[in-house]
Image (cartoon, rainbow, N blue to C red; front, side, top):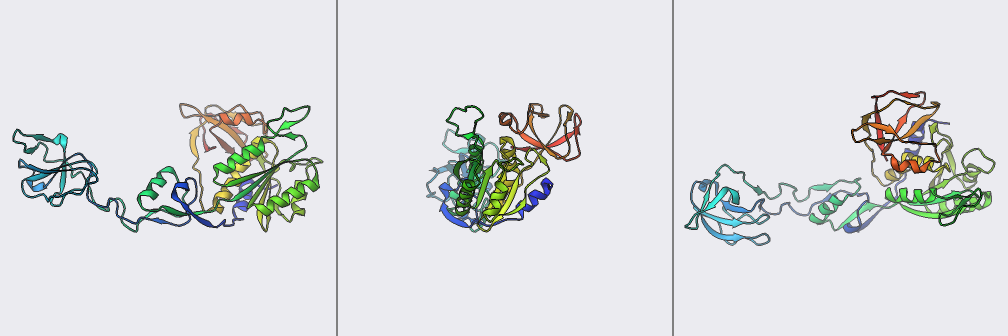
Length: 391
């Protein structure tokens, strides 16, 4: 049994690139950009008014000014501003030649003669100058960023209508256990609905990878081996749940070895999630996650998800939230690192959620994150600051 820190180091040292592909920017949300995106224009591409008002010369602001034209957004000015002149201008419109300031409408008054008088000669320039946001050739999105909705706007405005992204890792999910049935069936006797597969498929989708469900495999070694070989052949990462503890029918580690997987570890000093296995095949990484849903959920988040992101070139480093504990917390055993689901209260305190163990998946929706208590530590004092890792 190895520490969680050692397990994570082994997983993250086992990196493989998944390659790249070029896709339309409209389909790039949630993908990892694989090369820097550059702007093909200056932004703004012209001196632009940031207000509705009047384009004027600073030297003339003490004068009553003649309005020589109105400039709407999207139309180029037709006239140059000369001494004693101004142009009415709309937000986003091009500033005419000769003008070096836009005075807000609120800072002016229209005289009976039709001339414009400036009431506040100390107003700002109110001009967005060409290239002040981005210059042609500037990097607007750096390689390794996971693309967000606001990045789509950046890509659109800078002419990046196609973008090179990391390929989505292909991932296979297999559930093992003769007691398992699909969620649309009613359990009879000792049967249990399979929730792990669907949870993992959702976690895979959230991580930006592509999942394939291989169904439930009964407790038969040859059948399991056949499905594992098929999944390894078709995917970059294969995940099995169940069959990795010490029972008579827990033969998944043996199946991995027969399939050509070199096992790196098969026990982690963490609770929940101790019977977690990780192995390397020439064609795929393989995880054996515990059958209990909380264990498989947490070990995916802590071990599998970081590997997915690394394979895509995304350096994911979720920032923990440091907050005080509302009440003293004592755990029954401190032999392993403890993963405790917690909620954050309205007054920014941390409180453990009611949690009955690794099968209690219905507790997780009430948690905002988890805290990781080191092995050997069994007590957290009231008011002690803890690091909450968001889920």
